[in-house]
Amino acid sequence: MTANGKHTIRLTMAQALVKYLQLQFSEQDGRQQRLISGIFGIFGHGNVAGLGQAIYEYGHELPYYQPRNEQSMVHTAVGFAKATKRRSTYACTSSIGPGATNMVTGAAVASVNRIPVLLLPADYYATRHQGVVLQELEHPISADVSVNDCLRPVSRFFDRLTRPEQLLTALPEAMRVLTDPAETGAVTLSLPQDIQAHAYDYPSHFFEPRTWKIERRQPDADRVQQAVGLLKEAKRPMILAGGGVHYSDAQEELEVFSEKFGIPVGETFAGKSAIRNGSGLLLGGHGVTGAALSGTIASQADLVICVGTRMSDFATGSNTVFQNPDVKFIQINVCGHDAYKMGALPVTADAREALRTLTQAATDAGVQADSDYLQEIGRAKQQWQKQLETEVYCPVEGQGMGQGELIGVLNEEAQAGDTIVAAAGTPPGDLLQLWDASAGRFCHLEFGFSCMGYELPAGLGVRLAQTEGEVFVFVGDGTYILQPTELITATQEQLKLTVVISQNHGFQSIHNLQNGRAGHSFGNEFRHRDNNTNRLEGEYVAIDFAKNAESMGAKTWNVSTPDQVQKALRAARKESGTCVIVADVEPRRYCPSSEVWWDVAAAEASNDPLTQKLRAEYVEQRDQLQRLYY
Image (cartoon, rainbow, N blue to C red; front, side):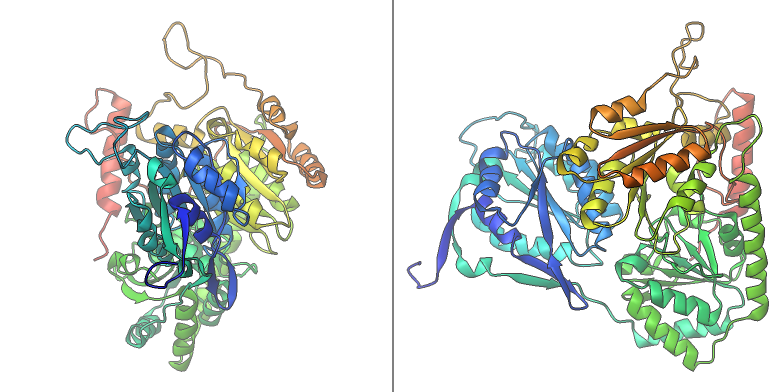
């Protein structure tokens, strides 16, 4: 007790941090859960004696997990937070130096995708009595800069705590940002290694349990009436569903709104599986790698209702997909920065609340579905489904199994409660087109940052949040090579994943783009060096992915036909531990084009006739299609 009669408790800064985190909860719609569900960490001299000691002594309700890579542990926290709809996350701690900078990529994934994660990197000595310390960056003009400053631009909140009492203001602000739907992302508290061990008399009330309510912002009445006016005028409206639909639990409201007014729905990567009941108005995945069906409808739409989406270039086709000269936009988004994009009528509100209010207001105003438009949508969907059956899900003579065929078998074998995770290369685009999210199957696509190496650790995060059903990690061989070691964490923690590796001998998504913009294959396939050309254009490199995964504790299968895939998936479902299915697929067999353009510029100056031709085509398409919607 202090001299003024207030109760205090003497703790090190690290101990106070650990004690505080265990007492924080989030609440939405009356559902309460722990805000920080545990902590991932790799210990070094920067955090072992401070935060490590604190977790050991005080972290009884803060489970510790041992990852294999600092970037991966942030991905795991992001996967968990996404699966819990941003209501809970993990903390991640690293030592000073490369451990901290390894987390930069994970922080970028979190902030770009608006997913909460708490980062606790160690930092240099704040007291400076020790002189220059191991792994300290000696900046020539800024003595207070460390490598942790790399985390500033990829964090939604950053603070370096140079005194133990600074926790009293830093932690509440960190929790506020983590639970604010409009501001959330990576939160970084940089912890000088000496200050972690310094003690302070903290007020006892600081460690009382606290619940952070995740608020639902209500829509402005005038904006709703303006939106109804646009709906009444529209002849060809369309909905773009983004991740905000999931985070606000607005799937039911979206389906009611779509069905009541006869408005078709395209889904972004983050919005995939927003429509869950097999609606006849679902256009499927939208954008550069989406379904041509959605791209065609979007090109003619005169009103686009965007729900919880950032409207990045993959959704807008680099500002080319919406070609109706009179097109208008309504942006429903909890974040004002996004709500005003595309020159839209902004409805800055929670997606669920906005859709409920808009549905009632449009009903009162007499807005009705257009039967002719509905019939047109139905015919277009039939044509798209026929294209899939004849071009994607069937074998091609003289070729191996296509990745589309592989996904087709995954669709057939997936059950209610199963989740599929993907992030980079061709898998997320193909799943955006092909994955069937009806009947209770989930889809988790990270494409805001398109981060290679995200898939496997994020799958662990999904599994930590989802105790029932299978968690499929669908990953290309190039991405698997980048970050396979969290298989060891899965084995250690007995967390079951079913990893499906699509083996196509390289980065075939970029290889396809390269051929379309440069005209030549170069550096995107796993080939031996050719002694004559001194380039990587010899035979494919033979890699035994199954043996690699087996060495880290997984049960494995090698498959090359749809029947073999089916048998392996059924066998894997019966296993209790992590499984890896290595599927050999045709390297250059791609899913149908979305017919949505993407602005990746061909070289403006080149002596290569083919590159010159591709540049001319690029310029013609850009000048013909690209526009600003302001």
